Length: 288
Image (cartoon, rainbow, N blue to C red):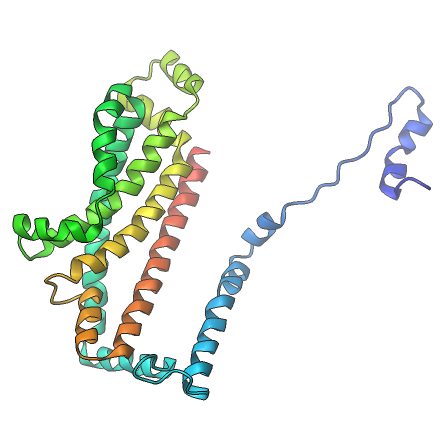
């Protein structure tokens, strides 16, 4: 059996010079993931395959075969018509804008607090011993359990809704940041201290860049939690928003509007996750 062609060509120099040891030239091939990253439209197209299949099955099982009655699962065309009707009434974008505003404000407040408290707990053993048990207990409280207390304290208004969303965004960021900072290589901190870095400067320059991937993962989980807590917040005492649209449509038997609200929540969740993905790339490019 003969050696591969690449290896024979590489070893030709060794045949000419007996003192030189034969080497095999490395085969340079970029990973498939890196090749796909250069074509974002390819990734987007692949990601649309499953939603397109589900949409086709939805249309086939309702509009074509009639397997599901319209009062249980309206066809996609009915949901589209419901959206057009709300747009013509001038209501749909108001619901979307109000819900998005609540989520963004609550997310920013909760994520900022989660980053701060997570850093304190992750960098200090004393703070971890003092705060970790209590925060762990509060994290186990369901979102709906906070609503009566927030309504008593903050009344029915924007403050109670934004606070509930901030609670939902706080815990994922706190958990990921505190856990990641506990596992930062201590030699990195020692190098920073050797250059005179202390306190917040050390955290901002050395420790935070070391846990950026974990921070981004926490932010993505926090954003998803914010949309989940938004529905819980708007189910109680809201007069506008996608959560209110869900409740009002259920009470009026408008299943098409219920499905419309669910689809919009899913799309908004994907869009905000894409935005965080762009931020992740910029941060990794800056601090990698």
